[in-house]
Length: 481
Image (tube, rainbow, N blue to C red; front, side):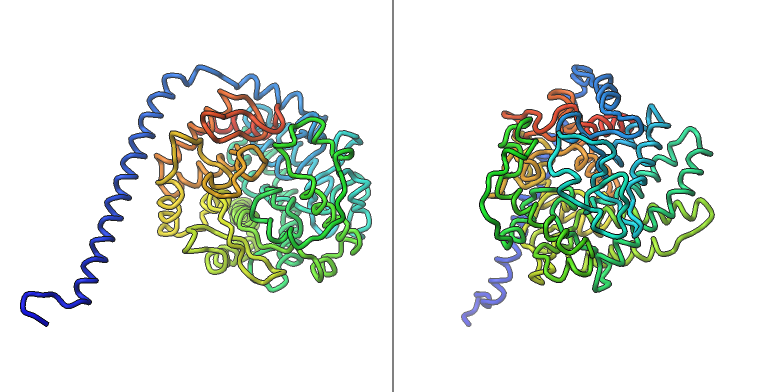
């Protein structure tokens, strides 16, 4: 080595440090730009906040969708009672019609099976406006199912735990709320026990879903690989699909996707809805981050409520602790700075990062502070605030992004509702305010829709209009301003 020169290893180290410093400076520059943009948006929107007040319209939507005890998600596309819809709807109702809010959840329990399962659809009344109806599900094949009301044979995200906690703490009639919870917590315990006993065969702390509809995120890119395994005979379902007569087909799952959805229902019926038999050959068995995060959130909420009501149920906390640990050890991806699904059928992680996973996981307070920082720096700091509303369900840079097709791109109000609270819980208040503002602007400017096109120069309400959980959560978000 000549005098005055540096060893090669030291030179390489200096170059790496310089590159790292450059990345840090670029990141700081991006953060400063985003903060400035958010501040400008806040000032601008405060000036126009009264431009379009949707409060009376939201109340009217909930009134018109009320069906003598429960609320339908929309009057012409979803004419029955849906599980997680009713949770969000009840919260909105609790701000102005508390009795109806309690009734909303009471009617969910009318459909609970003897083994604890609460179905994702309860068919309280007959209607020809929706497919597949009870004649397709044939849930009575399960010995634990009740005959009346008829129901589907699958679940949806278990949101009722954290919903009833919020309703209890906000109740004006505390005695009525206490009576309801003393009656319902044992029923919710049965539901969660079914999930942990029947849907977690290896006792990992994570439950699986056996149909994409169970996730609530019907056609998310997360499910593509599993659904590709299902081979079906090509048939045109347009004559039986009621949704296509009311909604533009570009907003809905495709014909091929629907064939695979129905194949899974046939598989469940063929096995008489026996869980142990279904999972032996079911090609769709996925540990989904969203449903697990919401189950964890509900378990913690129900544990706190059981303590508050004087009868602690330790299993809720045991389940929640195990689930949180498993999500971080099995589903967290350092590469994607996100939680990924795990395919039990293929026995491998699903390399598909969707925004809904980190949005809900933050709400459930699953990540550590360091993981939360990675999520924000990876998914929010580079976000194009000028071009898109927060937060598309699928990343807008993804090749699978489809801005109008259900869960492959649009903004959903229930996801943003959770995202706002999740960001606040980790003290990312500027970002929480930005998501809150975007959410309110979408509703106030474009109406009370099922979901929204996220691109700002093309934004419109999509799916069903007069959508109940959008109305309900709009009313709730107004309380959180």
